[in-house]
Length: 525
Image (tube, rainbow, N blue to C red):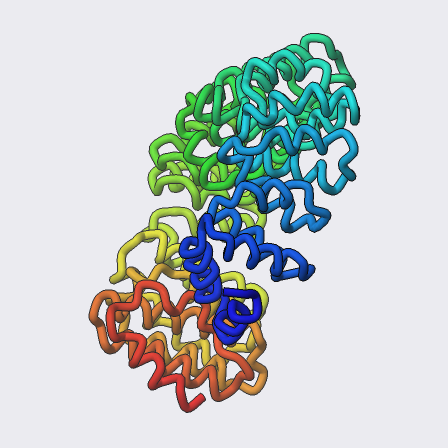
């Protein structure tokens, strides 16, 4: 077979089929003069045919052609041959002989192939020659592929030139950790900051290897302020390894450490003692979102102790914290803290604070006052009262209470849009399981009146759409057709008065086949 015949076969084929033809041809002609002639023809044509020749030589095991490919000017051809030969330990003499006079692009392709294939024998043999001829920086590019003993011996001299500490730590975490420890021992103050910044990209791998030792280094010799860059990737593992120690580090006000409490960190923080978490909560008193996330991430039985320890003898109001923070506490602690707040003059004499604290009382104590807030003469007061009433009903976790409150919202059609929006947004925030006992008409009418009003705002329509999605999901999950129909009715009404529909997460938790009913309702829109 010559090149013209091969091209005629592969030209009409897609890439996978083309590769199969090349592989089959190489295997069929392996070791024959016909293959040698075909490879020579393909190699004479720059670009894709030359790369095909290299691929076929790899498959057929044509060592003569492979040796030529190793020193080819074409980077793609040379790289392909280097990867194959480095993986199998072939033809190192060709590479070693060409190294001294090779261009930079060829050398770096060789380093990449050695690292990618883990060719430790090649790396160990190349490194002295590379360092002597091209200097420390190119030698450091080969270092990650060497054996641990070689890395341990050379890293103290080459660490300044290592281009990617993360790659080196992924292969040799123990060696990199020892070098980090050595560098920190000889640094102080600002020098530690530079060391941690240099090793920052490697910390995720170091924590995975030995989280306890990294936690100890952070505690003893960490940066004077903050954490190294990229801490979000490894902080959870460090906390899990030594919870109290790392939490104490986070709570150190002198270090001013800011962290983003994600799910992994929340799970790890649960392993810390209440004393350590209390000190951390105390340090976060001025950062309400982080404090809220910290307390909410704990088991309910521990939340009151941690928050109470952080507050000490102060109330939430005295500590400058919002009363809404009580919502993360279990009901008993929430009720006690609300009574404690209402017993203080600054809260009892302040209408807004008094309303918010009252909404955290037991439902029997709060209902009358909260209903009265929804009939206040000022629209702004009613807009604040409806969410408190609905939120307090939802906090009981009693679908019957929620149903009665929803049935009582008969004044909403006559309200202004800011009031309707506040009430509808509060209803949309109620968990779907608490809407099971509600009369569907008490859900559809407020939403329909709100979106059909002439002054309906974008926020009101968004709240109606969110409520509709909740009803569809809950109705399909519990096989309540009336809830599904109510949600679809609201979506239909919203679609008739808006350019777009709120369908966020509508596809979650739908039983098999329920998507057809949703599609049928939305298709006309």
